[in-house]
Image (cartoon, rainbow, N blue to C red; front, side):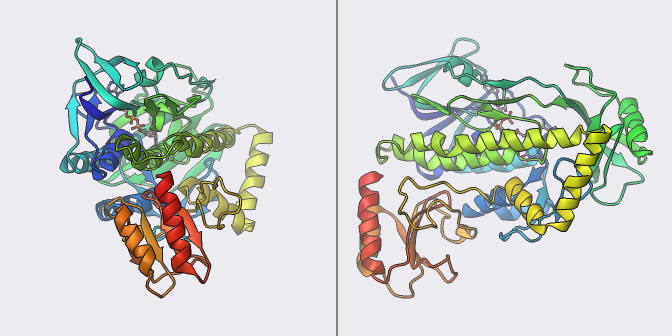
Length: 475
Ligand SMILES: Cc1cc2nc3c(=O)[nH]c(=O)nc-3n(C[C@H](O)[C@H](O)[C@H](O)COP(=O)(O)OP(=O)(O)OC[C@H]3O[C@@H](n4cnc5c(N)ncnc54)[C@H](O)[C@@H]3O)c2cc1C
């Protein structure tokens, strides 16, 4: 018997956000989480602009903005010449320093408030699927069944393995150190040091700590995860000439650059999101961000599928749209790894050249900042004759997508009488916008804030009604 509509494995940030998205659409959702308590260590610190836009679409941005530290400049490949985020076309032109455990706590509260059930201490050990359901086994012998299962269970995903989905890529060849410490003599904000010994970067963490992290060319022993305070201190002195008065570590660790991507994000009734679908060197602070955006893309599609509203192909478009971005993520984090580890004379020359380009060519800085922020993400339409806006993101969609439904955006200044009536029948709202969206007079915006359809035609009411009719058939 199928007990649940969707089972999400993993209560990390991605599983929690997905549960929020499923619940907002009314899908019965169970999360199974292995750990009884959440890890206190902030793996991720950087929250980027598109993620804040995504949070704003559900009215969740304020708490993040109130608690986080805004950083207007951020690095690419630990180059000393920082990228300028202030010129980004977003209401949030910065990187927000925000510790992962707080992100998870906020998302967990929200998921519970929306009615998701979270069972902790449930380690999934395997699964089996047939035409109508998936049965999930948990350590201790208990089983759960659901119509769909999503593996948001991190890089070592049991779900991915049990579903027979390959995870090709490369093992770690480079290792980085990390210490979250108090600094009695902190450097100027956002210090980056790079030389023949390695790299060191500092970033503030809300609560008075600093993250000191980087690459030590002389400390590349594979497999070791721990770092002592003495080691961190001597690495800092060797690379930066000072230990900045570091003390009272809250977390010391080492991590590698293993880079892998699931060969498919869907196998039948099993889907993957977040680190279960892609892993990489955490350069540029993007993994959690990409994972949340996976969940945003998947949530409304899976809800439509479960509720019998989805056309053939809608759920598969999750892989179609998100897989290429996972591949791009691997590419730019590998490129950053090359820059970070470039300690030879040739490598230093490459860094110097790249740094000059960032300073002298503002478009280079802007393009890289857009990439890290995921503001360059657009989902190419299948129809080549589609309006150029189709697939692009709407930066300020937060105003009108709060309930997670698609919406007709009327920018024509006239009422869309017959289109509005049709939209109402489909349960889609109408919003009369006061801002410009290129030359569009009307657009239909997906629940994840990307343009589904747009028109610049003067017969905007008729065009919108026809588009809604097409959507009705396809959704
Ligand atoms: C040092 C470091 C710094 C980073 N900095 C950043 C940053 O600044 N910005 C950024 O965006 N990203 C950053 N990342 C990456 C980010 O931490 C990850 O991308 C993010 O945690 C992925 O979230 P997730 O929910 O997909 O997986 P996870 O956070 O790994 O969560 C998976 C969850 O599944 C649970 N689980 C696992 N197996 C099972 C099972 N069998 N059964 C039940 N539950 C299971 C786990 O306990 C866990 O709670 C960093 C990573 C590291 C290591």
